[in-house]
Image 1 (cartoon, rainbow, N blue to C red):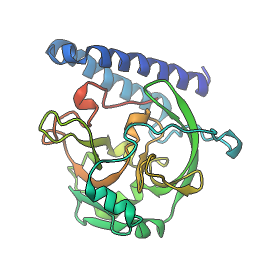
Image 2: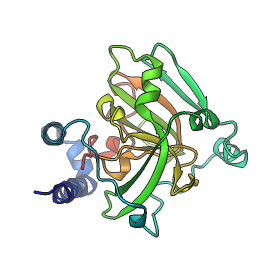
Image 3: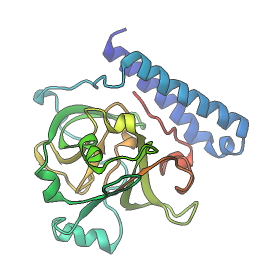
Image 4: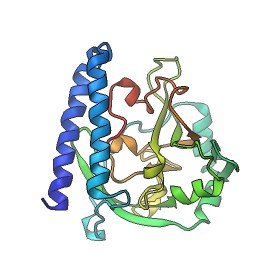
Length: 257
């Protein structure tokens, strides 16, 4: 099976499982037995993909001529709230990215600080769980280089991305959007914090001022409006405890393609 065919097969499989989660997540949540089977299958999928493709295997990169003429705004089109509106009005001059948690040297960086760091540009395909795809060019800072600078503690396992947007106020009453990946994906060479898209500054609709690109996973993992990265050893203290806003509502945590 070619890399492209394998990728399409994995996407189709992921879409099928996600559709099941969307249509019956409430019932599944009420069944510990079924939930346990799904979580076991998810771990098997992650292990199999990493075994077959390798931890550092790259997602396909495309040419400039392959860039899609249109790229949908996935998820939130603009966060609510006065705080974010003020950041937009000030062209994000007062925005700061905080990186803390299980680190020896917490960081606080402005957008200008990030743009001074070595950057990576990649042209990749975004595959949405809703069934659409688009190719775009992304430029940003490799996440691994930032995390390496913080001095990760031995117990560190996951990077959690806390975002500016709030959706439905459920679970703990917050609804604050968040997402997470493990440190293997965080240090993958194509995992970047993107601030440019198609040679333009990232728009509000596409996640300004900063969004995650973790290219070997589905679109809902490409979290937007990042404000804070927290390094943790588990998800136990985070809202629903499943590692992400949509994961707390039935999606798979590992969305590999």
